[in-house]
Image (cartoon, rainbow, N blue to C red; front, side, top):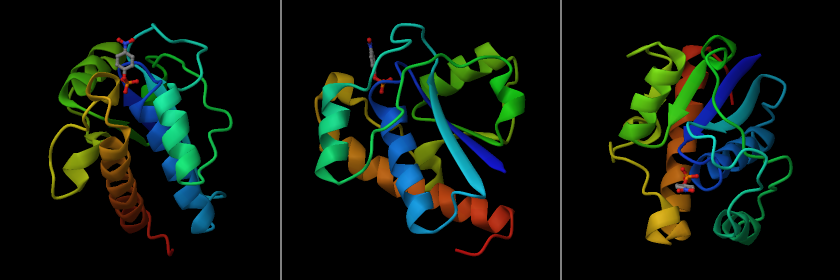
Length: 156
Ligand code: 4NP
């Protein structure tokens, strides 16, 4: 099994959105038996919380299940349990390095560095624009799945 972990600051807006979008991609490509997905926060602020209502609304709008999305915090052990640890912005990456104690490891990535955008995923908690974030997260998830398929010689 290949394990993918999306990480953001609160685990209520961007990373649960990415988890849900990526899981739907896996279902559509019949790859749920090969790749598993989870998400986590660098902060402890929203442990046990459901996603932000804006994230729930946009997932519903695109007919994507939000089942099982519950806030949790990244742990040091997660570094060893996951094959791809994907942050949403630069500050997530710094915080991931701090928590895991593993700076600049190739399994730690910034989502949109896999796309032509090469920028942070804007945080809708502050921008209020869940639609913009959804479009970028979706693009990033598609690019991530491509990368995984190439690296593990998987056929979609
Ligand atoms: P996220 O957004 O990192 O995409 O989940 C945030 C969620 C909560 C807070 C900040 C950002 N907060 O300050 O509680």
